[in-house]
Length: 238
Length: 207
Image 1 (cartoon, each protein chain N blue to C red):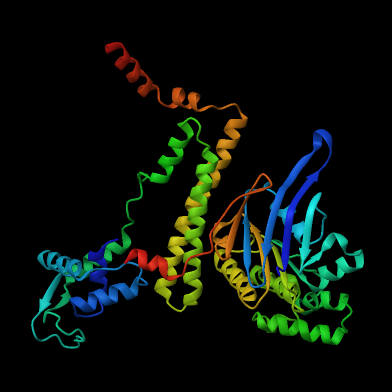
Image 2 (image 1 turned 60 degrees about the horizontal axis):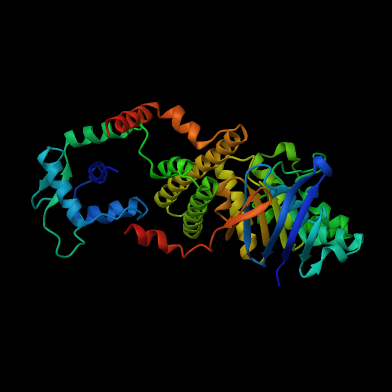
């Protein structure tokens, strides 16, 4: 069973002359442990795909299944629980709350989900330590570098064993070294069993994925084959 | 890549045998550029001819002799060789004229061939390039960044392929805008190839 499954998703914004077809008949299946990158220029439908996959928006037609559950049939309460417990979001501009410390930013989703403040705080600290940010726990976002802020955002997205990570240009605002460590992190979580969808226009970022899907005018126009064994390049050149 | 200067660089650390040079060359370039022994010895002979290296006979001192069956000759860099190496490191390679890029040619041709969807052509190349980049990234990931030379080579390759993908993205966007503005392949031919058009007219007249 896939963690995320999109079945023939279409999305139309507006009506009549102002109608815009953002997504057309998109089907995509993301099993546990797999990272998929969605590449396309701006206006290709990448962000719509991510907000629909994240249950933040409903498709005009088609079905979204999360761990086999049809989102359309869920109550609003159940949908909110899926958003808090199952899905982690990472955004280009980090979206950290400026008035909260790094640890508070990370533990907030757990507290909102009903966990005691103390347990949530400990879980938050653990997540930060795993990302090498243990000594930054008490810092506020504006006391952190861009790379550190994005790692805090990733800690917040994965805290509490979430099974689906959705990222929108997660290293877009970072230099190439920090961008690489962010992608390395997301990939590490995938290897531990998280499913991830990363939308981006950046090929270097996309190349971390197990599969790259190309979006154009709301349609999937092509995708890469699963990458060959790492030895193949070196064999070619010898 | 200059094998000549790479060998001078390796010799700048001390005298070495041919086989040893080959092994070290491959190790220092992340084993991405294989080098055959023949190439090593031909290059060494030319370097010797130009006075940039000299052979040492017997008194090779600390040379490691770990290659069985290797010729007994070790090579040492000369002061002229050191000067040449220093000069080479500082002079930028000539990148002034654009290379005759086959991919650029394919896209330029695709625009003019009737019935060809240039965006499909562009996508086919984009998919191939991103797939290659995935393989390099996988290699980088597997090495865990422990081999510095290898990481640098992989970075260079990823940036090179990335620049080609970006060009394809830019070409894709530019062609879409041009079409929206009423551009047609026929108009390009007239606008950018007047000399060719004239030549064709002359050819037709002579027949």
